Length: 437
Ligand code: ADP
Image 1 (tube, rainbow, N blue to C red):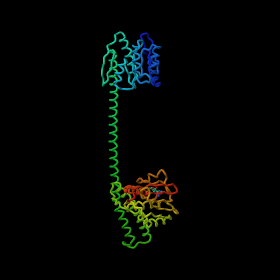
Image 2 (cartoon, rainbow, N blue to C red):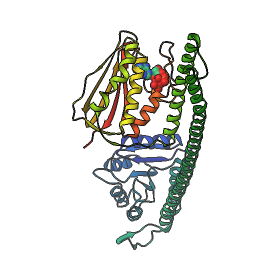
Image 3 (spheres, rainbow, N blue to C red):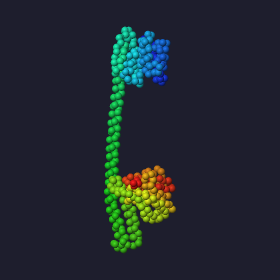
Image 4 (cartoon, rainbow, N blue to C red):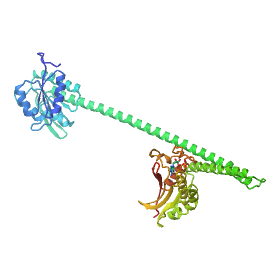
């Protein structure tokens, strides 16, 4: 607690027009043992000082009607209040404010926001200096010019020194805060740099692992194709009776071997295509492609398979002027894959419809089926490699590469494949490609 010589709490008048700031300051001072009164303006402060014998005034600088500097000057011109210790509270850090404060006769100042220890220390110093000076005679005035402005200062040496020490202290504090901020900034920069390096390293590692995987897949599938082709070739030779007569049972066994060989070969081919696409080894021959002329002939390939499964195939046809930029062979590969899936996942009595059109500056081919549909949670992942919707009903032959290959091919042609589906009702796959000029 701060007490006067008589042991009573020190009396401080806070002059502040902001109610919240006044209350905050009052509470801080009261908590540290001061007896505090608050005035909301300079005029109110003058009235209060005539009524109540405060020992120190802390005043805001910027207030309506009468500023803190004007209040300070009014006190210094009032014979009864001339010696009142006066601290200015300023939110500005303009160095001229310090001198303006000195000129009007303020004892010290404090820049907002301040810390409690700073506030208490300045109050105590101001009270002490005032006490010492009370016994001495006033100094002569001196004129100083700073940044083009002239100030007449009548303050005592202690007062000037107090203010200058305070401003030096402010500079030191600001500098310390600045250095801490600078160190923090440097630390964050280093942290961010390290995170970037880590991410780059992880990316390089992942790319390297992916490349190794693709190379391995390409090599494996290539090596598997040779013996698979041999199996196909020799079983055909046997079936033709080149090695001697073959009976009916043997012929049907040979046909089974051939069917399985073809299936395995198509899987291996899928893996090989995917691996080659991953390593960017598949060259594309992009040219003007008429959509109707590409889609129409697919009927010959698709209809027999569809009929075999009891599924109807319908191609609605497309306007002859829909021309896209694509590699026609790769586009055909994509559509055969989508149509193959549509047949695979549609039961007897169902229907497959193919439409094409130009929409929003793009050529679009849509393959719709009335099949089993795809659950919403799987709609995006079915385009990932080796992903199949895990339902006993839906899982048929294939390894889950068809859509991954198709989308990669479409992307390589600056197009895309998207899907809409309702479980149990059917799916629609849309292939979009850029229109030719
Ligand atoms: P695969 O057909 O070899 O399994 P795909 O990449 O072509 O691989 O398809 C991935 C999965 O997407 C399929 O296993 C299936 O679950 C689902 N799917 C693809 N097309 C359809 C479709 N038309 N209807 C229902 N599900 C489909």
